[in-house]
Amino acid sequence: MVRTQRHSFRLSVKTMRPRHATTADLLDVEALLRSCSLPVGGIRNKAVQFHVSRDRTGLLACAGIEMFGGSIGLLRGVAVEQRARRAGLAALLVSALVADVRLRGIDALVVGTKAAAGYFSRLGFTLADPAAIPLELLASREFAHSVISETTLLKAEL
Image (cartoon, rainbow, N blue to C red; front, top):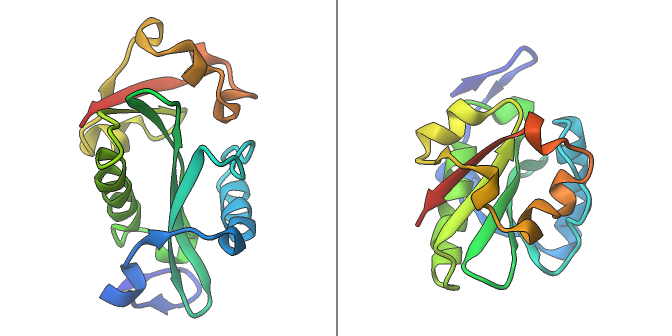
């Protein structure tokens, strides 16, 4: 059980089951990303795919991947609704994305963060040299309003 300031919240296995986001989910994904102060640019691009978890009241969490034609992808938009935090949803969604992109030939993921480097390190990501990251990835709309030197880049080999 996860306790929030407003009420108790119980997550079931069915609730936590991630699924591919549909076009209908994207409005809720965008709202959740905005509420977490995460970039929303390009989330409707066909190269960006999200996984989501929902319950009867709405979207609980999301995580996205932006693919760049090669064997590297950008993990983006990992967000969890305040009422569902500390239940492992972010890690579950990232794990589902990793399994999905491995089947598509992606063998490395990069994530850029200003505040969650420790969290992604616990998931197996390590610091990455920006010079070693493909320029097309750094040109993603994910980083459109960021200064790369102020963003911690991490990479995970799959």
